[in-house]
Picture 1: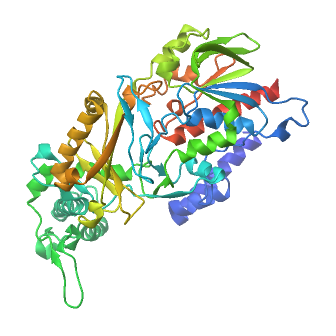
Picture 2 (picture 1 turned 135 degrees about the horizontal axis):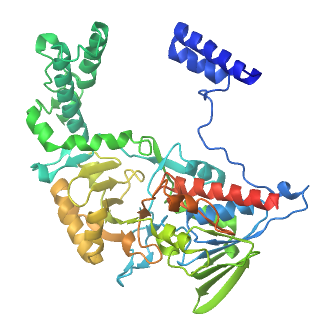
Picture 3 (picture 1 turned 90 degrees about the horizontal axis):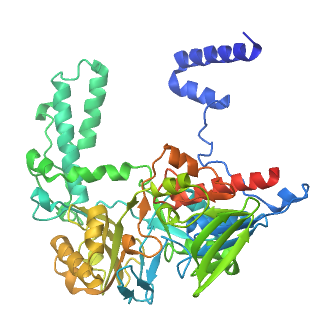
Length: 534
């Protein structure tokens, strides 16, 4: 046994001793002190060092020329980070604006879809629809870029106890508040588990002390009675009120006893609770003040508008060995740009159609990413009746209607007007709406929403705007489902000669700007290292 092996064995023995005497917590803390486990203060953000001009000072090298295909978040991030070190970057974006799927619709915005439907938004000043990304988890790298670029953020209310749940297919004839549904499901589940525990059904899994701890937890968690009451769930103020508590001796009027256990379970309301436990959905969440497109705007300003060529549709990519040639069409003319390297951030299913000499295996890999349809409709109302009448301030209503989700605004509280996202759906539901005209989408969305919110969902409506990502030119989909771990996926993680690939589709946070940023950072690091080494 060599010295290194002996040291490792001794360290393991020491840690075992610590664990035996002090428990797992003491052992983990000790491992952190030894540099073997992350401490509480350790950063969870992947290490990234942006290239700088000083990297070249002592090497005699200089930044290379780079052409970036696609002016979405990934493409802008590549140009932004490389630009810090003096790389000469050119961004080619087929659409008339940068940002890709980061799209905020305001009054005056005009979009024409693949079916020829043209919409001009008529939203009031200060009213907008985030047609693409609408929220940011606080742990995401996107928050770091907002800080670095000076983009102010505010809280996005992802979960709201006073929003609604409505499952028509389960026989519900009226919506139920999220808090009421949660109280009833948690209450009845706690009752069943407490009874099973007390009757010995878990004796082979729990000690007597464990059982008492579990029963104590369930009484609090589900607001159930004790053993004397048969652990019954009978409902409490957690369910909500007909009339809120007031002054003096006014206790308010609680909703009363819950429906029978069988009815609560049959309503299937519990299917929605788990979303807020998702790591990418857990509160708090955030949004840029004034619209999500403040992020690509800030990125574009930092990159420099002269480096971003809009209306530039890529028509070919050729790796010449010592350089890359990219042809594109802009303003009715065919053009070409030469660079030392190329970074392709276009959606993979679209990049697969671009003629190139990178090999058939690259084409097959790009074409192996299936796309997802998604759509939203913004409904502007003449009053914020959901706040005034229903006491809903932000959050999301969940439903099994083809609306899927209804979002309430997380800003502009107590303002004169406001915008509800009348549907945010994916898959078959999204394609059902995208096949309709904008007027038909509004009609269908409002008819469904009236079932939840009543007449004001129609009578207070001022204007609407709908966006279907599967019908959007130069995108043709909301996001992809990466074939992680396959040979094709891994192939695209490496450069094809002088061509690199980046985007949320080459990450484990697909459909999030975080995925675009971390993928862009990975390519920037690899490309810069290659330039420095050669």
